[in-house]
Amino acid sequence: MDTESLAAHERLLADVDDHPYSIPARLALARGYAALGYPDLAAGEAYMALLLTDEATDESGEYHDEVLEAAAVDGGGDTPESVSAWIAETISLDVYALLTTSLLACSNLKSVHKYTALGLAAHPSDPTLTSLAETIHTRAAAHLRRRGLDPEKYTAADYPDRGLVRRELYPWNAHEPDRFSPPSLALMNAQMTAVAPALEVRAVRLPVLAAGGTGEVTQLGVFARRDLAPGEEVFSELSLLTAALPLADALCDACSKRFPPLEEADDVVQCDECEVVFCSPGCRDAAWEAYHSAVCGADVDSVAKDAPREDAPDALYSLLLLRALAMAQARDMHPLELPEVRFIWGDFSLEGARCADEDAEAFAGRPRTLSFSFHLNVLLPLHILTKMDVNVFTTSRRFAPWVTNTLYAKFRGTASARQAPSGVPEVAAVHPLWCLANHACDPNVAWEWEGGMKLWVRREMVGWRRGEERRAPREAGIKEGEEVMSHYCDVFLPVKERREWAAGALGGMCLCDRCVWEAEGEEKSEGGVNGE
Ligand SMILES: C[S@@+](CC[C@H](N)C(=O)[O-])C[C@H]1O[C@@H](n2cnc3c(N)ncnc32)[C@H](O)[C@@H]1O
Image (tube, rainbow, N blue to C red; front, side, top):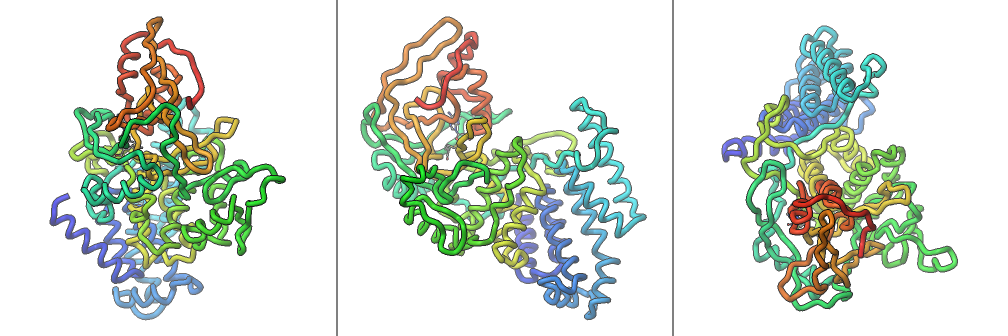
């Protein structure tokens, strides 16, 4: 983004800061995002404008008076009636038009359908909304046909409601540190020394794995400070950035450790103020400081209560988001400044990468790799924040949709999950130091997450195979200065399956030495289990 556009965008953001209840200011910000090729962010801000119009017309609205005051300054007159007329005649249609066209670009067809219907109820003869209703129907029918389904048998409730949006380090995001600067590395290494005195964080060159990418990029990795012997435990990190589905095993709310059997559960304690349970008084106190004071008694976890089985991963990401918002609120910090979040990898698109498809123009031709659902990325955070008694109009810098998107980008690249026996992931966590370790299908460490994340040097390395050909395992142990290679997938799977499994976390197909060697031959390995 050039300096002039960035300055113009900064003025729109500042206008919303200065006039948080002004509907035109919010609408101008939404238009600004649409013009810059961020329809997802435009939809978020257009929805905020819609909420403000509701506040203006609803006498019992919490911010009714503030919105009327702002409307009077913006030219809506100084009576509730004049403001209502001003909204109906000059604002409402623009809000619906921007919200719906933005959601359409993001392929959130169920949501577009809903807001187009609401827009048409308020403006029945509007040609743009009328033709949009047709477009939604046509796109939904094409989507269903592509899946071999008969559109006649489906209603708007079955329309897809998810799309891909730009995954970027937003140009106006002043919170992302230079991860490679000496002060950043010193900070990360101070944290690393506390959990792993024999390891250090360093910059490393890695191959670009994203489709269409070439060459190498600089990223971070974890290295041995001294020779490490096979079996040596080298790392133990406790994270409170955790999430568990409501039906998961009985787990500590803070660290996700499974509770011991009742007769051994002397340490298990309940919060003094609500029903949430922790594995120990230590976890209870740490949780209160870190996040629980912001959500105690607020029943926020119910957000994932009814998630269907196939949506379990998304529900876990939403719960991680919820935890991060609660951490920010409890500590009065910007979510992107949280030590748990600040340095982690967001897998943002590389500068200059392009993409061309039917929606490319709405996204300024930039690649789109971040999952976006209006429900999860916009409505859910607003719902959570409202439950935490946060004024969502005056806290835009801290809790805007671009902040939510950035958090999702970071979590989607780094969270680890534990599965129920059914294979459905039911618990997730982000361990900010563990997730600095890179992946190899011939890893030199193994890990286990139960309460804390533990990492030890493998006692035996993995044997390689392609077809009938075998390559004996390398000698176990890690030499001083050697990179610690973790694993993001079951390393006993055949190469094709390993690559498929790890592709999400790696951002593309694995090109580690073992994968390259095994893929050259026939892919005929046997299955196995995760771990060592
Ligand atoms: C969990 S992070 C690992 C730490 C990361 N390198 C950093 O700078 O924070 C995962 C990302 O690291 C990169 N990565 C990890 N292992 C890799 C490998 N074997 N080859 C290339 N990239 C790798 C990928 O970009 C992946 O999305």
